[in-house]
Image (cartoon, rainbow over all chains, first blue to last red; front, side, top):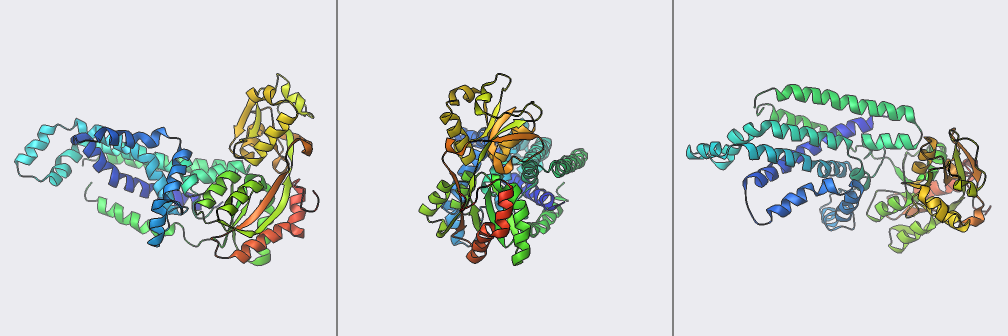
Length: 217
Length: 252
């Protein structure tokens, strides 16, 4: 059995989760702590990927990053290919899962007592330092929970990936796509084996994370 | 936690280059109905020319959209001429390479779990048949042919409330295979599965399903793509295609 989809999916979902954290945590913090014009719009935009059907979202994304799209063209000029590569699969998984992280992390940040942050500021801490030494440690469990949700969603991402990364065996065929392909080809044995690996693998990872969650920040 | 974060990043960065390594030399985008036939044809082609083929199956409409937006396909086997014409009009394919490789047929399929094999479209009106699976007529050629046949037989209104749409023809097939749909209309080329019995539907009931292959413009090796199309249309390819119920060029 071809094990490539398993490794690809593992890497894609880890990278997507990293990307999600990188973008999502600041957005969640801004939503929780700042009032600015367009904030409601941003909040709506964040959950959009959960509302739109994944294939539809994938289609719109393809219009933007495909060879005809504005971003796709700009990247092509820079010699960078995004659509139909494994990077597109990372983007797809990140887009599909980021809302889960942002909403959990935002809720976490909102429950942090602002007076504690104020206290740190009066002691001369910079905003950056307040975030790392007060806000994040106190919201740590919410952020971790959001990360776990986002990671699981990233592993299972199907619709967006199918549209923007294609279903190219050995290149962009992630685990969910591979399972779908086997089912379609009537190879139920292989499909079941892959599904079992997916579920088992993620369960193991989550077990590790839940042990980690007991760690203090 | 802050102590092991950098290590996690490093591990991640180290894992990066592995994905997407050594690209296969020929990527074939093919309509879902070709799945079973191409599983046999591809290894033979690989052996005869010493190239590696990566086969991507999907609904013709979806694949065409992806090719239009720069998907790395070298060759496109569409279940329908219209998609290829659309791509040709937009300059995404090498128009001169277009070749008809088959004409599709549709069959009336019955799930074995349901009981006796249906032999006439009118039997779909039977109240014991609660679901009829076809591919989505909006974008799947075999779905469109199924709709045309039902309309021409004057059964569309009767059967319409029972219809369930598959994303492509293999998806529609699955509805019947699992017994979730008691019957359906699928491609002859995918109908030879143990869970199903089928009856050929008169080809005069629908517009001919002319299946066209074409070499994609952005390919780095047009000659290899053309060779694959010729292989499918050559003696070895034809004998396999015929076995899966395609009507081949010269036999229409």
